[in-house]
Image (cartoon, rainbow, N blue to C red; front, top):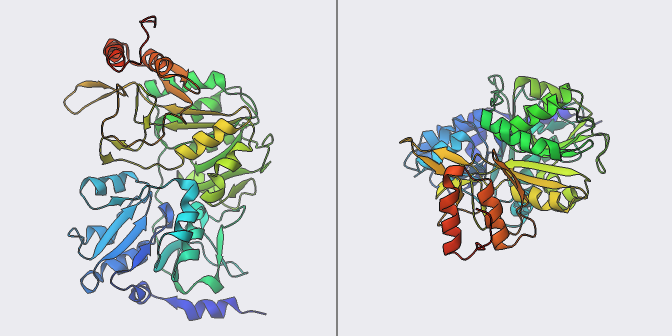
Length: 445
């Protein structure tokens, strides 16, 4: 019988010993979210003066990231994210983080075919009796990264939940080069945002369109959270979950007895997700839960997979839209605030689902720091980063209504978008549409 415990002891190192494998010029990967290796990060940061041009990738990491904060000159460490958390956005604003554009369903393929990983470092659960370490709530991204890595280092985090998966939720000790142990603080909870009145009004636009048996993908942010809370209070039943990100919104729907996954056309009986971020209660829910299945994003976000789920409903937030129907969801002008993520994946997949629908939601206006009100519906983008092309946008929602742009001509789009703009801006948008020759004289005003 193989003695996994002996192999464990042979591969066990201190964080300081483990990071000695890193060389100048290396590409290092911290994976994602709670998978970030906090002990190894600190030990690597302490080697700053010995190393140069070490490039690090991560995403949705709350921080602090010591290698970044210990080297503001970026002479030694250069950090990159392919989906910014609030903390990583703060780093981007200071020139301390570079964004990597990525469509999530291609995550595994990017690493397999195009990206170099000299050393992968990731937090995992303690080893089980069969020699496996569980990727926990980081399952969506960890596996493909570690498969690509020249050297794999796992950091045992005793606080992480053990999740059940469709595949790719574990790594065996035989595929691990170095193991690190140490004390960790309790998992940092992400409090569910409290929806504003405008968030609730947007959610109320969507709720009547949903039906029993729908499978839900809810993005991150106030509006998806508001939709989840209203669904939990609604009469809907037998809902399903298929989402890249599992948040407390799903836990609320489950606790209300409405999340059964009984009607799903694939993965029936299982709530499918890639990554989980939320409260301690959420982490307790996903722990050892046979009703949930974590998969790599190459499966969760694959449009072909999503399209196989009847009545698939995708609900995501966005930042702005122009009169042509182009959508920006990841930047304010050139300022990176989040990432492409899975929005385009679910727009395509849900649109192809039998009975499926894809919603992009936003407040109609925002207030700048000087107290000036601006419309989020713009005449035409000029330099903004387009997340979702106009050819893929389906339902758009503001507090003033919900519209469907699929198959609509330029003048139909302009008319529909003006109808859900804030009333104070509708006249100006009509004049801008006329200048661009996308407004019919017979259109409603």
